[in-house]
Length: 114
Length: 117
Image 1 (spheres, each protein chain N blue to C red):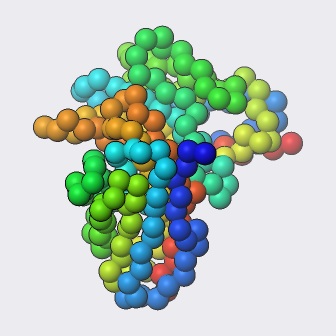
Image 2: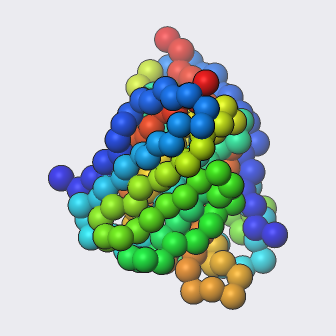
Image 3: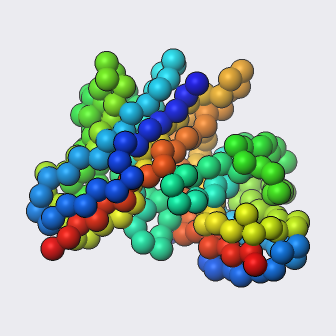
């Protein structure tokens, strides 16, 4: 089954404790991205990756890091989480960013930073 | 600047009533428009998309949308809703990044559709 898998689904952590949210896709997609969803703000792009070892900032990259060492994986790293990073996070992938490339989304990771 | 605006943050309707969720966009270049649905505690799922051709596009679960270039709109409609349609709906716009060959998907802020019995 074609899917994007995020882990964990739920996470509560304390300020300053480094964490990683994993994202994996099994569709051989080149393009992957991370979004955060906040009430009243919709989805905002954090980082994206066009292919292995190619990443770039989205609209709200501050406080986040990513890496793309393999095509299937695109982890999101919070080196020193803060309460304003409490949010619902989604990973997405698509064959390309061209209009015909449908984006597939993971189930989401609800992060709470206390 | 490219942007997408969803005019209603919440839309309550009764079961079997028709519904329209409104979306407007602003763009100076070619447009590619999408509607995504997010059911409670789930990720986003593509409902339908407009890339080119017929301005009336049909999607899953009986939804359809009409691209209106003169009004820069892409409203989502369903003639008769069910309780199971309760979800958040996102309009999204794909545009080409400045000076680049890749595209960016920009989302509206979402419309929460609540279908009541």
